[in-house]
Image (tube, rainbow, N blue to C red):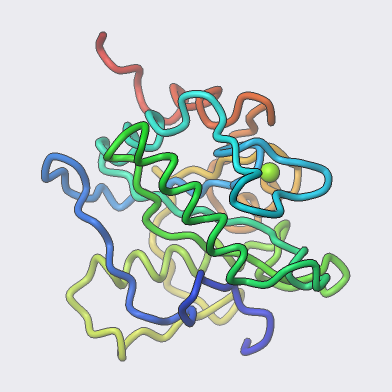
Length: 216
Ligand SMILES: [Mg+2]
């Protein structure tokens, strides 16, 4: 599957991924929180989020991401971004939007690091494997994070998709959070538990279903 691959900001999909250490020397549990972006991290819009200045984080999301990482869970954002395919703006604009999201998160909590962001620039009618409700972005995220956590060389990475990917790691303790049916369908197709959050609340609405509440 060479066409319609998921995309990363500013680098090719299989570029080496440098993961920041988890907080307080926490070791990785092997779990990933796959997070949709709009309606989960930040306020979405029918007309898209078109510039860094339009980014507004949802309440308490930085704390939620930090808590996930303190619990040994890696964060992978998986977001459909058809405005790129529609020619409204380019991938560098999206990268700047993601820089803004990351900076706002870090301003609220230094542990609120997004380990990986993948996007799908394709149009709905292209039926890309990398566009939700298909699971291609989740497949790529798992393989990139697993490889980054392993001692293997990046030249040994051979990403596989759909039926070509046979030996898959367990997603038993992972989760996909989204605000749309297409997010839930992508999670089902991938084989990971899904949680639907209200778009006006986002990740904090479901955080206690992923990790136990913090002791106050
Ligand atoms: Mg959404």
